[in-house]
Each structure stands twice: as structure tokens, then as C-alpha cells.
Image (cartoon, rainbow, N blue to C red; front, side):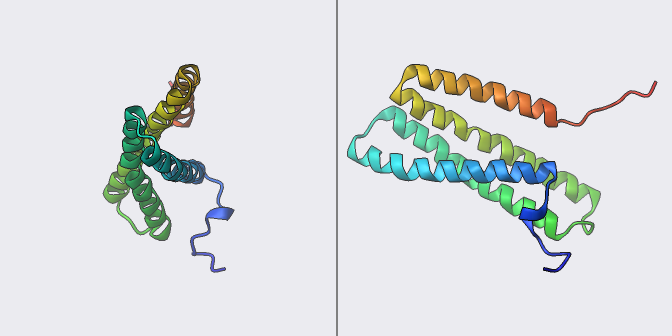
Length: 143
């Protein structure tokens, strides 16, 4: 394989770990849409319909994230700082919107059991806060 080609499997940066998380979200959301969409046709429920709508609204942002990620890899070192900044901002927005799909998943769990749904929603919120705080840039004051 050419050294300049895009090979996601061999990369280990934090950006690549985010890519893996987004891929898992996309797979989970697609599976939920498929199976719960079939169930919704058979036995319609408002909360399931709302949860499916939330999940469906986040899927395009997951796709855009993958497009931005691949574009950045393919054009590494060729882009201006202004364009890089805009692409990184768009990528961050896509990630945040994609994480909102977890709200739809929590609603699905709540539909099954209120306790499981609330527990999933709370643990998801704490996990997102934790990972976002750990992944944020660290500024060291050298005063």
C-alpha cells in the first residue's frame, strides 16, 4: 500500500478513535432504525416514533463526519489554516449532533423500562462529559 493512501486500520490518533466511535454509533443507529422501524409498523407507539425521528436526524451528520475525516486525511498538509479550522469546527458540530442520537436510544430503552432508560440516559451524559473533558486540549501555564 502506498504511504500516502488512507489506511484507517493502521492509524491510532485520537481523531481515529473518534472515527471508531462514530462508526459504532452509525452501526447502532442503523440497526435500531431497521429493527424498531419494523416494530413501529407492527405496533405503533409515539415514544418510539419520536426516538426514531431523533436517530434519523443524526445519521446525516455521522455521514458528513466521515466525509470530513477522509477529506482531511487525503489533503493533509495541503489545506490553509482557515480551511482546517472550519473543517475541524464542522467535524466537532457533527460529533455533537451525532451524540444526540444517544437520546433517541435512551428513549427506546425508556420505552422498554423507565429505570433502564433513565439509567442509560444519565450514564450516557456522564460518559460524554467525561470523554469531552479528557479529550479537550490541555493548556499548561509556564508562569
